Length: 351
Image (cartoon, rainbow, N blue to C red; front, top):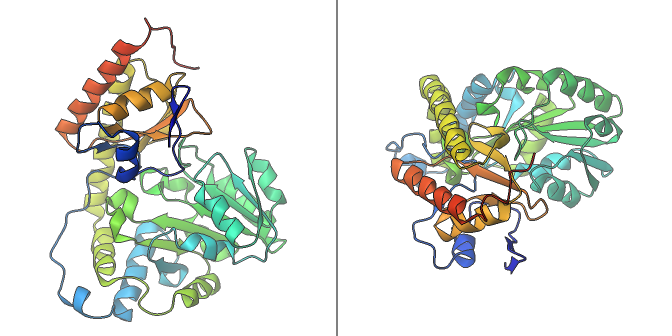
């Protein structure tokens, strides 16, 4: 990690405070980590039953979680839900459902999908044209997309799925941020048709990323294929208990969606005050495009505010939501410093 022509090069993932300390060793701490799309207002912690830690996870609790998840996400039934210790571990396993061939990823997007498809033996390419995906054996789409929030309609996705299904292919739709997306565009209710895998992440919306819990929604045969790769006790007892309670708590979810929408609007207004236009995103993260993105990243980092920088796209940043009034105030102060340090406004926001 180094400074080069005023830009800081970082690796592909946000959320590493160790990396932040290496990049900005003199920054005030604790860091305000806005480099992820994880909800800063996590689901309330509760006292776990002692057996969640002292005993191996019960199969009945796993089945209960699959049932609750099916209801929360709109899958046809519990038989359409594979429970896993995070969606990350699912990626190469899902890619392996199809014999090695051509994997196309609609980009730019989350880099781990391409890496996982390559691990599964596919020849991988990233494309920016949705129609090009029809030429793949396995097509991968993040919807809503990370980092720009792009949404592909359910109608277009179903047409693509039909095309791929006719050749024995597979459509993978990563709906990690669909909890705050347009639910009508989710393919969760369509997975029983076959040839579709929908990934859902628990930790982002519920703010419990360290719990490591995720789901693959698909037809029953595919779900069974995935589950046999994990064997027994793959999901820890505490993750089962939190998943069951949080996914059944529709009231908390509705309240949180409203709160996140308000916070996202507040962040947009704050950024706008200092000349930073929001180009997209979801209510868990905002997508920024500006000429002085490297300068903004560096200035905020020096003040202990960590954004997500993309070395291959130097004019792009992603900003998560502050979690407390103190964090909002620190962000406002850092933005004011960046704005004041610009050369008489010579670095304008890119169109």
